[in-house]
Length: 187
Image (tube, rainbow, N blue to C red; front, side):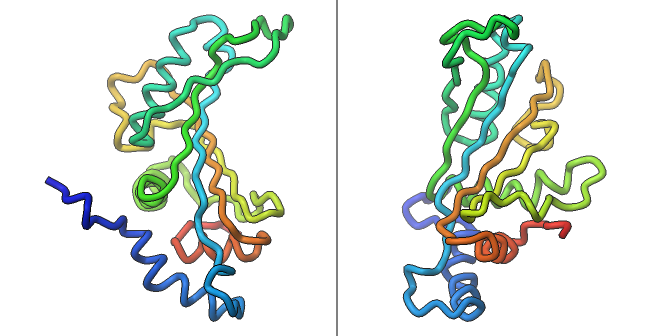
């Protein structure tokens, strides 16, 4: 059994031991609090049109997201009614989960080392998907690349949005931080 009291995720230990010093040297930070770090990772599945037709699809998406994240996902609901999309207010449309702390580092480790290499025709993630404030957003066409998802038991392959929020002040610092975590950028 895993002793959680003395357990530190591999990427958190790498950040504390190697990445902090490398970032301090690379950008010339004088104060240790200036060094960028991961703040949170937000995962989102939008079930969309399938959830409009069948309300159980949002629950299925939430269950899959819970398995991937290791933390209970929240079902997202429509804020407004939109007649053209046949959406009513408070209709379940998807699921989301916000990871912080050890779960965040564990998820990032699984994403980089296991899930992304399993993506078909993978050539790296887009290096330009930063928002100008040091946050990185990416999408995956299928959530089934994660090992927690049993391929035989899923009814539908969902798209997955992943937003990695950092404390970096600009995109260059955030990209350098993620490169130190071995994020496979293609540019």
